[in-house]
Length: 185
Length: 185
DNA sequence: ACCTGAACACCGTTCAAGT
DNA sequence: ACCTGAACACCGTTCAAGT
Image (tube, rainbow over all chains, first blue to last red; front, side, top):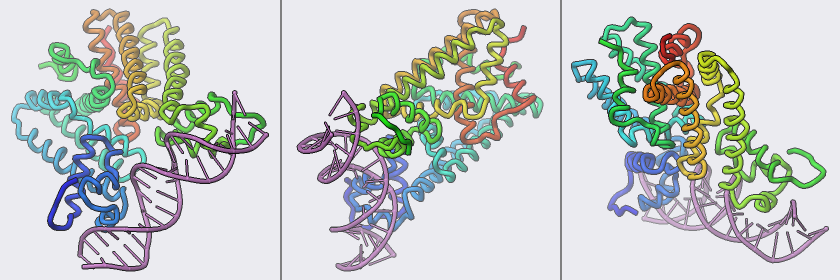
């Protein structure tokens, strides 16, 4: 329970919800526990938000802005497409990277708003990957196919890292996996 | 609400729960709605099961036996490893195939019992894939790496099919994806 | 042995009443 | 404008009481 002098803003609730999402998944984004944590009542929550889905929509929006858009912008600054691709793999296999992704994918099944954001992010990732493969000399069509495969592997990696981490390749094996997803040249 | 003459067995509850899981994900495996559907009370449920986690463990076990073990056995009967691999892809891109997989992966995060089954199934799938790649002439090490990539793509496919189905390749594009995961020869 | 019905805890949601 | 407190619904869980 956090002490404070003045009232809570909508943003305070959303930040707390993002922390809860990272730590405990979607089910941790719960009104009563958050209220307790913030030292407020549930009634206060319903002044700032229409309902729990409203909070979830806000937290997903924050996640997209803070983690996806900004993260992609930082990657885009890397000149060499081969280095950019390598960095993407490094990020993808970093433990915990996909935790929010998986939580949101789970929530997307029952929340159309979340589904929309997840879909948009996944398509943006494919576009980003395809542009790298284009720079590496692949045809438009082949670049897109390679990009889809890489996205599928990336999503799979996020999921498998949570359930069977032993399967995620490391060291030399990871290098080989990377080479399977990197065109020769 | 289903009418019946005699009492319900544990198995009746588990079968109903599997249907609910397929239709509505993990959150549909709920005691009160299932009781209502079966025309019983929640108290009756707690005669057959220790708690909801007990039901979930049982439904996961049934899923593993009915869908995974038996499905793999049927695939294993196919002589030509190339055809066997192709059949795996066909199954993987069939809409709905991964719905239970994703639901269980989601549940695995909070239920160690489910996590154990999911881990076991994923490792078995890698072994199965690796044996196919071995038959196709790859080295033990390379076969395993190719198998891991194929599993990641398969898991990714199940997830993406639920959130961004437009990204899942079809027709000629699917054939190309397949070829990316199939060694030449 | 198998089930009912009532009770309680927890969380989402509403709302009249307070400042 | 912003919040409290009490109320209700829904689902998980327990348990004394019924057959």
